[in-house]
Amino acid sequence: MRLLIVAVGQRVPDWAQTAYDDYAKRFPPELKVELKAVKTEPRGSKTLETLYAAERERIEAAIPRGTRVVALDERGTNLTTKALAERLKGWQLGGDDVALVIGGPDGLDPAFRQGSHERIRLSDLTLPHAMVRVLLIEQLYRAWSVNAGHPYHRE
Image (cartoon, rainbow, N blue to C red):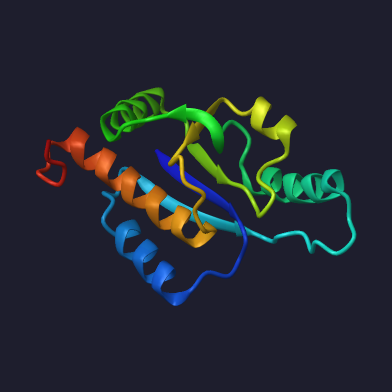
């Protein structure tokens, strides 16, 4: 199974890339994690609908057909680490690759969010996009470690 993190925005600070890379290399070979960064549409004087459409097109091009799409959305389901671990286990048992999608500065196109298989939220707080990448991969690693019985997660 492959976890594909699709994130709008190509530049992140070095600290965020280092942290992301550190967690990405910890996953076992049977659970591959890949990051696909897609270009943010230049804001300028474009309408929100135009921005959404351009970014949605790039996001959809980055996701292979047959992949389960999970949108990160502030209105999505709030999960505990254990609940995320259960989701991850279900995804693994289902056998499909999963794309977790992080929107741009204006979020994700509403139709894209609604059309995704699931919508989850990472926090009630508004987080910088670089931090979302790090938090997401850390929580995915933590969820995997819970399922594997590792002592990384303590109650």
